[in-house]
Length: 121
Image (cartoon, rainbow, N blue to C red; front, side, top):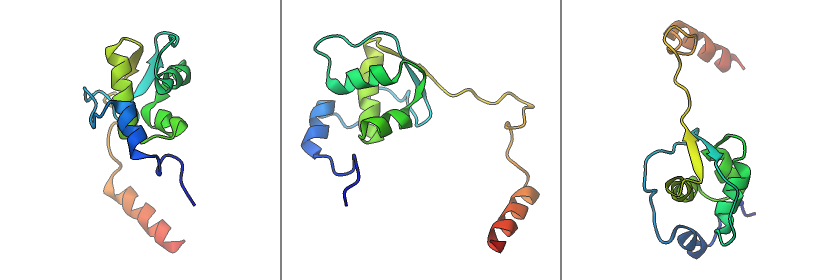
């Protein structure tokens, strides 16, 4: 049984990135939202076209990689190309505001109760 994206030919992935193994910037993490700023143009790489089509609405990097069925590392390289060309914009996830319920970690008492509950299952 083969898994999509896991058994891709390494030559194909090498060709997609032009031999690069890292993106030009560290802008992207798994939950960074990407938005297309233009329509695809003739002559664009098919993966770039697919990314621009996918990102008409804000889409997370991990979702783009899953939809394209290519590794996240390769996806970030392709996204970096599009970012430098001005074809996409990037929206990092919003940090929680101080005082909001998600700003701090739960207390250890709550975590211990959850662990005890899980062990009882």
